[in-house]
Length: 254
Length: 136
Image (tube, rainbow over all chains, first blue to last red; front, side, top):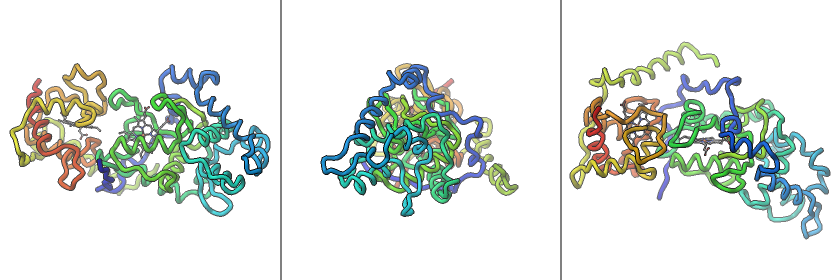
């Protein structure tokens, strides 16, 4: 089946552009059901912690080509990765803006001289989960305060754009109708606080991009290719929208 | 967020069509003529389209007299009594493109001629025929 992206006929509507007031923001953890909350709260029942364990093992193991392990350059993950996820996506020394996945892939290719593991591979999600855990409970930093205002604006424009055959914007569901029931599914506010997540519906770990791809296909819009700059822009806007909220990565979601 | 007077004026302007869609003012709601179709409309098929998640997915947003479907949405009015509140032409117009009635609506446009249509002309006529049978 072919998918189409139908662009908005009307420009962003100021009356609706207000979003959710800061004191009314709720993470997906707060709005999901008590069973999923209990599963996430207890590290022994949170399936994402298996990913963390695998990621920590990978952190400490050197590739076969004799190049250093992650720990060979960065040392103790608890010390050097503290707060890193809370300030991603971030601009790199060379000017490129990367999400955490892209950053890890760049280390794999440049510093370990190995073929980077693909997005959504178990290995990369595990490494990302191990790094993200070191920001758990910390406040998400505002990308605009780190020179990413332009990406924030591009991401916000996408967020307010009507998309796909269903002609719905992210904002119409996540700002205007969060808490309501779409079929049997409660619409969350759409905050990117818990990624990578273990999603019960997937029965697997997955990234924010995978989650966003689901929302795109939900409105029958053609998703961008994996790693496309539009996904990063959207992530940056979502992080701006969630700035100051606590990270709960790696989370469980329904 | 601060709204300029212009922005508020714009917002009020956009709110007007929404108000005009209240049932009491239904005369103001546009009607659409029947679409050209290859066979007569079939209300029973229309009912199936409304309920099926892969075709009409209406119950993602609406509720209504559909006990066989467990999960109904609560983003939109119940479909019960639709045929008492709206004329056939108004129901058809709503299905073809709700933004013609309310520019800010979340209801998807179900019929387009440019290739990306959700329902065919025949299916629009089936659903329209079914909805006119939903009376209070």
